[in-house]
Amino acid sequence: MGEQSWPVDGGECLREKCGLIGIASQNGAPVAPLIIDGLRALQHRGQESWGLAVPNKEPYHRLGLVSEDLTLATQVAGGYDDSVAIGHVRYSTCGPTALEYAQPIMIGPDFCIAHNGTISNLEELFQVVRGPGEVPPGVNDTRLVGERLLALLKEKEGDWFASFEILTRELDGAYCFLLITKDDEILAARDTKGFRPLSLGWHEPTRSYLVASESIAFYVVGAKLVRDLEPGEVVRLSSEGIQSKILAVDTAPSHCTFELGPAGDQRLPGEEGDRPTAGTKIPVRWRHRNSRSRLGSARRVGLLGSVKNPLRGGIDEGPLREKGRDTEFHRADPAGQGGN
Image 1 (tube, one colour):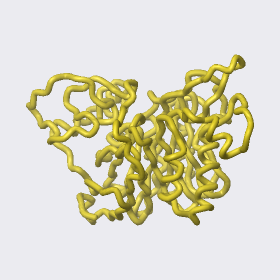
Image 2: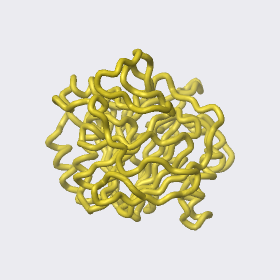
Image 3: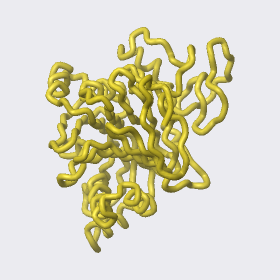
């Protein structure tokens, strides 16, 4: 998603929901085919365009659905042997459906960025990045964020966490960002209120960490949910493992109602307690869609076939469980089941 524009009369045009996925393998396995499958699972979040980015190359963009030409999508994925990649599906409520608005977006030679959400103080950000003046129609807020982050990286001598800490204080809105760097790293960040969903997963066959807007993307590729990213958290994924830091915490976390869905066997964001097992009776209530409520939808469109709901038989927590406010480094153990 990410870009923001204004109609002729000056009224603001909001864009709400897009899909993000990023994968970093620790054994050098090509991950682009998994990105394509993950984007298909997230297609309900955006149908206007899709894109794929790997380090040190121009992003690939295409209008329409991933599934409109699966042969082409498969060929595109087969052309990349990179062990890290990110993908994006775009949705907007107004403005042009054009290839120039597709994401991820390349920010110089340093990184590509993709965005799900809306930046509400775009005017302030524009003046910081471009100087005094009115925000022109059709300005791309994702590109502005990328340019600001690039400037902060130079100030902080390449320290991603320090740069994101400043950026987080400067931005208002509901957002998640996903970046891939020239150094084969993935950065994922969630806003301080947790408006937009973002989850962490683990794929044992390729020994990969994944981040995605919804965990349905994990199950489609045979990965497991580890946990949701916390509001205000930034994680860095690479072949070496994962680093995590919570940069800011809002005292009153919020979740967008459009990111909720009906499912009776899932926990609310931040809810304590064990996951339900087979036979457990739980009242039906609105649950966070990020926590596996898209399994039924995926079956209906033929993405999962007869895959069993992992909740019914229990699910391992994966290689990463918890982390503190400071940066921690985690390397998956040989079995991919725990440890740091």
